[in-house]
Image 1 (tube, rainbow, N blue to C red):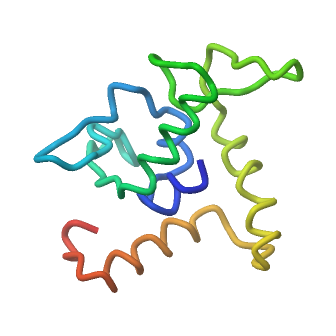
Image 2: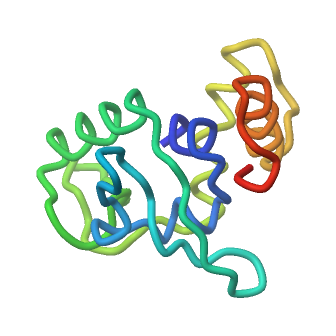
Length: 128
């Protein structure tokens, strides 16, 4: 999940609401399509290959093929049916930030970092 926030620049709410119908190939590249974001705006986010590989690894382990992509796992290590809550997305990312030596980052920092990396990689401002 942390790769999805940084690699695709998704908001926490978008990660929590991500379903299999959002994952599509367009022009030979994987994308997250029809994301409903802030103020009801609909957008498409490109998905780097390493993010697709990470998502596929999760899906293989979770044994899910429809509905929500990211789901809670109960104490018996069983994947639940419903999706994650928005606040849980941040709770899952926080320990990784601390382990990486950047404690105290804000949830939106990952989106800003993604935008900066996209811009440094030659991305057009209109697309970022």
